[in-house]
Length: 372
Ligand code: OSB
Ligand code: MG
Image 1 (cartoon, helix red, strand yellow):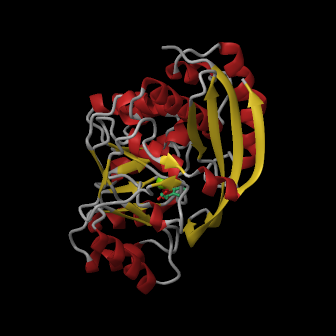
Image 2 (cartoon, helix red, strand yellow; image 1 turned 60 degrees about the horizontal axis):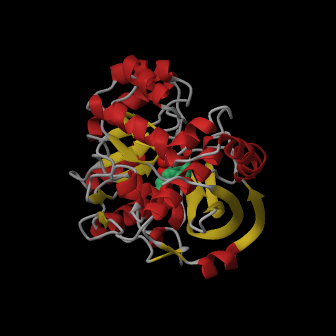
């Protein structure tokens, strides 16, 4: 079986979040999401979702830069490469520096397309072996500690296996202290989204006493050296998110001792091929990985679930139920999480969920057709 890519549809949709999501770098209330639908000459299609945000605050990309990069650079490179297999896309796009969320949106769509052509679920096609995905939640900064405790209690009662709190300077120790004293034994972690520097080392050390599963991305994205300094001072494991864009970054981080856990996000690393390389590299070195989230709608969520079945994904990820974010998702059924905090794998072919095209179309604000 060989692919014969023919065309690609880009649609931008707008989807209001049920609740504002606040991190150290800003507040999101509405998502603008770029959906990729790639068609093969045989008539089969595949879906991808771009995880770039509205603003360049998590990383340099935005939904607007991603649209331009896809239309102007990704499509011509794909056309020139005569792609026969999804595994060739990552290499074919390597000439484009960075812009991994743009490339990943297309790369993941081609994997879905290939799985559908083969009549297989995507998770099996990419080499997944886990039969159940463990789910945790990421809880944004809340206006008050009481509000935060309420959110945590709701998620713990729903069965989520790990609670992650967003922190930032001035809103860190007090939050962790409140949640930890109320819940002495839950799996708990924090995510700083690069908001601290080595000057905050004494504050970071105070976090050691709360028995956290990890401290995610405390320092700047490019700062593997300072992360390694910090990790030497802490007993809590550092988990890197923003710092890890490629398997080479993972190697550098592990050789320097910059972290003990890695968060893999499909968009941040440019798609399933690079994600597979990173998880394999970590797996061989007994470094656990888990699947991060970027406030995705259903297509992105479905790709995250497929990736989470790869063997190295031994820790609960940030992939949670659609209903935590959306009144109505764009896939059917929506992603649900059991009372044991697990997600059942979809049995359908490709991403395994139906895309509700009628709902999706009703949300479209911009579209573009590209011939490959
Ligand atoms: O750092 O993990 C992050 C959301 C937007 C940007 C960055 C991050 C997050 C989350 C949310 O933590 C995870 C989710 O999608 O549920
Ligand atoms: Mg993070």
